[in-house]
Amino acid sequence: MSNSLPSMLTPPAALHAFTPPANSQGLPHATGVQIRAFDAPLGAEVLGLDLSQPLDEPDFARIRQAHLDYHVLVFRDQRITPDQHIAFSRRFGPLQIHVLKQFQLAQHAEILVVSNIIENGAPIGLGDAGHFWHSDLSYKETPSLGSLLHAQELPQEGGDTLFSNMHLRRAVEGRRAEHTYLAKYAELQRRNPWRPNLSAEQIAEVKPVIHPVVRVHPETGRKALFVSEHFTTRIVDLPEDESRALLDELFSYVSQPANVYRHQWQPHDLVFWDNRSVQHLAAGCPDGMRRKLYRTTVEGDEPF
Ligand code: SIN
Image (cartoon, rainbow, N blue to C red; front, top):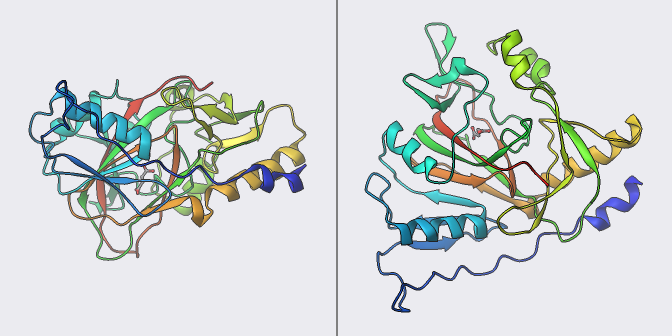
């Protein structure tokens, strides 16, 4: 079976140019917000927008549409507070709270601190959040719609985040796979001894779930691969060896450079990705360099 797969996994269709919606007079909307596509298989920059200021409905609608079209949006130089980060994220849906409550930002449970910084002998955040390719919270019944990661402190070298486009022209349809938060937990603990043990309550919060291997994006109708190296453990109804071979093949598709946009962080970048369309990976930075970002996670739908 595995030999026939590469031909089934064809690159995503070329991205179509984003056309800004017209206002009620049929004229282009005139707030100065621009969407500029990257020269990459996905991703675009949003220009002319200050998220510390009120965002009107027409501009919000343009951002929602651009998010569906490009899957990863980069908002440069956003000097926003945690409350403004949360308020902007909430416009896309309810926010999800990460199971590792140890790494919530104080007084802001909706923000997960992603950081390699150790203070007073203890980690201030989840330093290996993106160590393996994944879609956020795919181990929940209702995985995430998208995540918004805001740069607080960046290393002088490295620290990039890679995004891979999961939209396929044709794929391995009809199959279902198991996702669990625990899939790589012990391995990450071995690599990073600071990673906390999970309490019985935390384990109960992340029971394994079954999702389709190829999901349909609930807003665009496009099909996307929905298995990941980080959280997917097996394909349901396949013998273990076939399940492993199929997953390995699918995982190698994710990291193919032709599908990937690599984000090199700039100070105060806010990056909003669509967890229904992409998977992501944190590339890491040299030991001893400080990196800190704040993440909110917007709840999505049960995959179908
Ligand atoms: C994540 O997986 O949410 C973190 C990504 C990163 O640290 O670049």
